[in-house]
Image 1 (cartoon, helix red, strand yellow):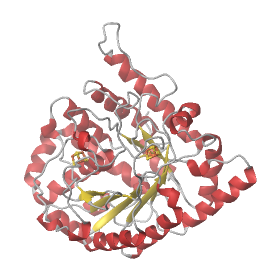
Image 2 (cartoon, protein in one colour):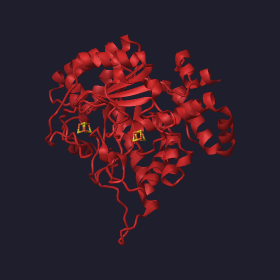
Image 3 (tube, protein in one colour):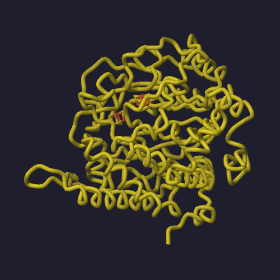
Length: 433
Ligand code: SF4
Ligand code: SF4
């Protein structure tokens, strides 16, 4: 049953190897490391302290050192690595060589992405030549995920925020060239108040209180507009990053990963967040047959419950246990991008076996770590505490039916592999009538 659920629908390839199932039995899950290759960036996003206008000493990792890092990851059963930034594709050839190295040492899921600057260009011949060159380079690697950031359903709003002009009008053609090489990039939304268009979603009454119903409805409409927009551009995969605003009482105040901001554009109150997550949860099913929508509804359900004071029903984040973040400044390891007070030193010196697996952090909503932690939580329970899991299945049917549906959907999506076309016949099973 387990193997069947986690084999991909197209190739019957098992997502979890025997080695991985063995580590689940020991209370561990396949490792994931986010490597911030650089904090150099050429964009001006309001949601991020790495924007080009911020003056701070910029850094980049050394390629040979990252190769050593990848060797250490493979030795420790890390199955997924993301090369992020800043803008990683400012160093396209280095990233390509590191993707190749990661694949050679046996890392299965390799991801990188771009803020989209590559899609700029006004001369059609030069543009086509450039994109063919990039697609050919990436297609020759074993990359599994290639994201392109999109901030809004309104092109002008997106480009104004990024400070990068002429991207959206070229994306449609660019994506069709990528498809010629068998590459299916994902649209990556960082949820913000302009997701649906140029007018910020605020929904405050004259007395300053939140109009909750209107807020939820406006965000439901905004997410639908966004999905329709990226589908129209030719994306077949879409992801949503939950807002990482910096509040004084959030883990974010020590963030080592500077992809955070205090800007109102991205800042949501604890009252707004469950409504935001509910709006996304309501919208996702209506697009599951048209796009491969990465966002798991079971994770959103847990986040909603957490913000409603039921955090005991959430699976703890695996940041600092099985998931880690590598900082571009000194190549040191942190539990995640946000627990900046916990410098764990060099990854190759880390003894992963000695990590405290009872840690249960729910301090932030970083989708990169929270979503997989929720998705894999029941599997971990199945291997380590099956009776407790059985008890919870009976007492919390809502979570488990939602989770099971997510797992079935992930399988129908071929686990969001950027190297396969969507199987619309498989996705049609999730059509909402
Ligand atoms: S969000 Fe990404 S593209 Fe935008 S400024 Fe930050 S690192 Fe650069
Ligand atoms: S919830 Fe996860 S990503 Fe967020 S602070 Fe805790 S360990 Fe880090």
